[in-house]
Length: 228
Image (cartoon, rainbow, N blue to C red; front, side, top):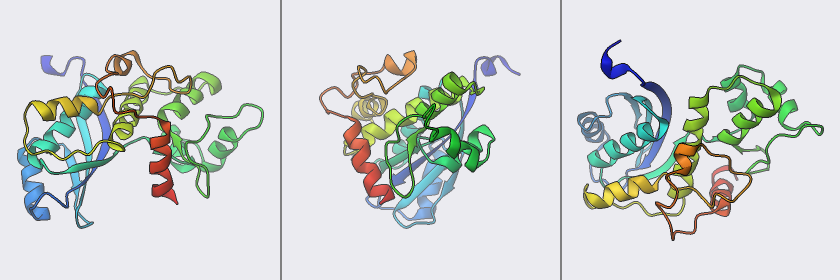
């Protein structure tokens, strides 16, 4: 281990972008991304007008990993628009895989009438939760050994998605405005909401999107479109 590795963590996360306005073909987009610092991501270009990046990024904290990844993508593709960051929206199977349990076991835990889990953000054929809320509940109420860095990552991806549902990210360059909007990805909804349990580091970034009026209803509208 070198001195530069001290205090560093690996964060696994994914970012999906709309690239329909970028103006270059898939292969050129991939080349631009690699040159911009996204060589720590597996890049998917299977859907026209979309790019998905699965990152394994080293950073001291989750916020730094997400912000630097978004910066790198938008530096390469300034007209790209963020669609979703994950892990955030999860169902029974997703949570079961993360904690090493069966889907049936996780379904029984989350829907138990005696100790019910967090309220889903979307209910229908497939129930969907915020990962950070489920992880905290599993740790605090059920005694599961959940890694703190995973909870912090889920906090940040949740904040990114809340911002992305309301803000139109159309960049004409990579300067001060880009830095300001990237920091805004981490803005949180009103921290007086008792259902939102976030880490001190993420809480310290609130206000970066003051005035945009982001709230849980934005998530719900997004999820209704995504899972209907």
